[in-house]
Length: 116
Image 1: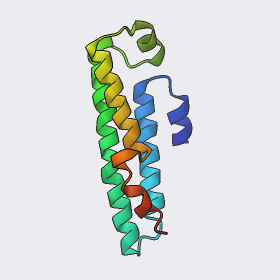
Image 2: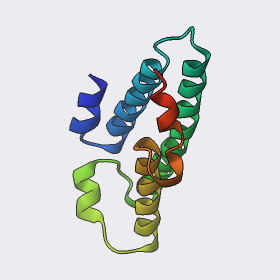
Image 3: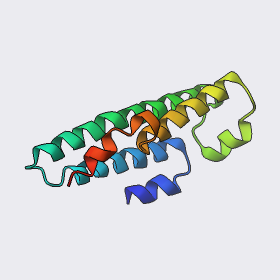
Image 4: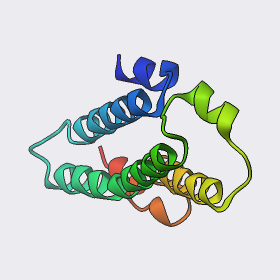
């Protein structure tokens, strides 16, 4: 359900709710064998590193609201024009995606998550 919400959302708020839900499911899946200490450590590490991505997405949403007054995808896409704010929105969205998809420096949790 949460992945469907993530990919079918019409605005950034719905996307964020789905985003967090998928992160929670990821944490629970990594920590499935909760009696294993390594699984516990891997789940906590994944949750902490994913918070970097969450902060990036939240900052992008804050700037979107401040700049455009809306979080609706179609409205934002119609209102966007090159500016410093749009650059930073894209940068924060990039960091958000990097954190969630385990890219570059934010990949350290992924090998630990494969412990089980």
